[in-house]
Length: 250
Image (cartoon, rainbow, N blue to C red; front, top):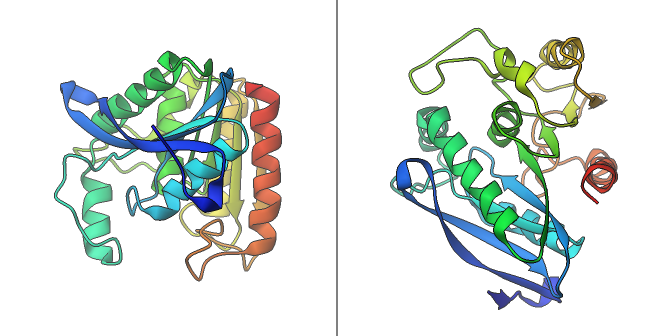
């Protein structure tokens, strides 16, 4: 791994490859602090747009805070597409099978746990479709903490070939505490869906914290490169994220 650029001094970051679902080669990006550690691990799960620069910056942010962080490219098997073209984005997001995503995410968890500088404690965080994938992972694998940032499509009765079982029907298997961060102006997930998710987690005896920011805060409020960004909500959200991971991973 190589030392990262000037904005993130003191980090070691590089492109990596994982052996994902079905033995396929999966691209990823990984960063860690300098030093022997041990440092907790974080799987950063990308938005619907894929492993774009914003996701890499999130990896850097966690490494700068003392975590070994990795972001797998869940679209590694797909032809490259323009992340500004929403039809292509939606095709990629909706066409990714849950079995494939889960296999790749498990590979990322395993990579962290076998990294010498990692303590073995691993959390996951995802935004948008990555929030849904965070809940998918937490419901089907052993991790120590999960942060769902406005994950859409968790609370639904709809199924597809790629998504044969709603994630809301899997939450009895959640293996760790969950932090959910949402905007009340969001429609996917809507405030009603957020309440349903929280109730399902609590009824299954899971540890859950939910923070919903009042309108006009909506979907994508952490995305500082898009008009949906809300500085006030994002600053508070980052504080909650680091407090949560600090409590459960340190």
